[in-house]
Each structure stands twice: as structure tokens, then as C-alpha cells.
Length: 365
Ligand SMILES: [Zn+2]
Image: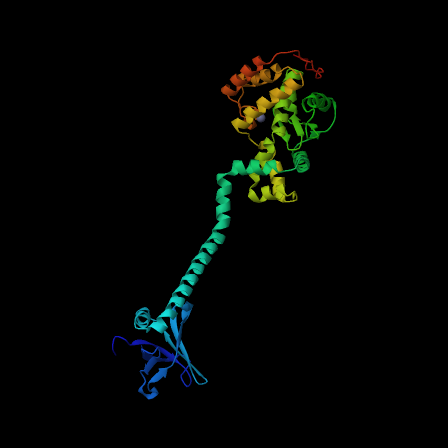
């Protein structure tokens, strides 16, 4: 065989399905001369053959021609044989190779894109999880901003229903009345319809659920020294509700799926029940506490209630020696810095205060 001969497999009439090995060489006329290795087959001359890509994954060369009614093909698969076939092709055949190169490049691009798309689809959920974890705070506030007030109220109902299972909750009575009277003054103009409750628990605590549900524990009621102190705690809790802090906390705790359901108003999922249960133990960040203090002070001012009570209550909690800090300080972390800030803010406020109705057994500032 000379350098102009390239090898491949011949397919055609009377040849088995797998084809037979053969050598081939281009003619100057553009024809192809085929020399089967099996001497019994004799030399074939292909007139006006056409070259396309063929074989596995279009990676081979397919030289095809007609001989009367018979269709013949010569497939070149090996890379170096293909190179020789291309290099020795006469001009009228060379042009056909350009089309093959274009088609192969197109296929390769499509294959690469398909691969990229496939990896993207596989990685997408993972990517979403990572993004969610990295941006949990930001996503939580984004979601929370899109939760309608009506959904928030329903979440509040769920939290309340869950809390009733864990503790005795009073809906009425002199304590609830006293809290409501102060609370009303603090929540004038709010988008929520506030509801006030007393929990028969000795812990010194209070919490605000989304949608305007405020629960004050018996332990806290026993601990406040005046109506103004109670007003201070209520103002702080109302501020958490108004600033949707509890909602952000719930969304962060519940995860992406629940957050998405919540945005679209599907509150049936059991995960919300878990979230509702955990709300009583929800710890706020120092930033959230600072915000709630500031907003609480603003609410007290707007209601013309002396802010001294708020300061006094926290000062007393801080100075009292206890075995363990009261629950309200573990869910609403306080620091010396926070107290200093509060002290400083309170001195800025002046004006005439409208005294509160005396809370039974508590007196007023
Ligand atoms: Zn707080």
C-alpha cells in the first residue's frame, strides 16, 4: 500500500452486516478506488462518491455512492486513516470536508452545552441550599416582606393554639383587661388587630407572636412594679411584632420550603406547627433587641406614656441577683451596653405624660 491508501470497512450488496476491511484511494477525477483485503471481492470503483460524517457519534467518515440500484458505503473510523483520507482527497472532494468540520463543531458545541445544562440541573438544588444558608437572614426578610398581614394573623392563631397546649392561657379577667388597656394605647394605627393574653406560668417572660398576639406570663406580671413598667415591656413586645421580628425568626427556623409556602399562603404544612412551638423559645439578635427598644420607646412617646418604666424594669432585672437569668433576658438578650443606650435615650425624652390607669396592685410611676 502506498501513502495515498487509507483503510476502513466496506458495506454493500452481498457483504455481511459488519462490513469487510478494505483499503481505498482517491482518483484525481474525484472517484474512489476500493481494494478489499479479501481477494475474492475484487477492486471496486466508486463514481461521484459523497463524504459525510458517520459511524459512532458522527466521529467517522462515511463515503457513499450508488452503483445502479445498489448503495455502497466505505466507513473510515480511525483518526489517522481519516487524516490520510482528507489529505489525499482531490479538490472536488475537499470541499465536502469543510461541511463535515462545521457539522462536527456544531455537534461538539451542542454536546458541551448539554453537559453544562445537565450539571446545572443536577447542581441547582445544591446551589439553592448553599445560597439559602449563606443568605438566610436576607432571604428570610425578603420572604417576610411578602407575607400578607392576613397570613401573619393566621400564623399568630397557630402559635396561640400551640401555646394553649403547653400552658394555661387566660383570654379575659382583670389582668388581661389591664394589659389590653395599656396595649390599646401602644397599638393605635397598627395594621394588626392586637389580642392580649396572660399565661399562667411563673417564668418572667412575655412574647409577641406574628399578627399581634401578645402573651404575658404571670411571672412577669408579678415582677413589674408599676403600670409604666408593664407598658415598657409591652411596648418592646409590640415593637418586635410590628417589626416582624418573630416572623423573620420563624422563617429562618423553618427553612426554604416552608418559607416559600408561607409566601404563597399555604399554611397547612406541619412544619409550621413546629415553628409555632419553637416561637416561645425564639431568641432575638442584639440588633433586633436594639431595634425593638428604639421602636418601643417611639411607641411609648406616641402614647404619651413615660419611658422611665421601661428603663426601670430592665435596670431592676439587671441588678437582681438570681441563680439563672430570667427567661425574658434569655429570649431578649440584654447587655450593659443596651442598658446604657436605653438610659441615654430616655433622658432625651421630655414632655407631659398621660398617667396610666393603675394596674391592680401595682400603682403608677
Ligand atoms: Zn426583645
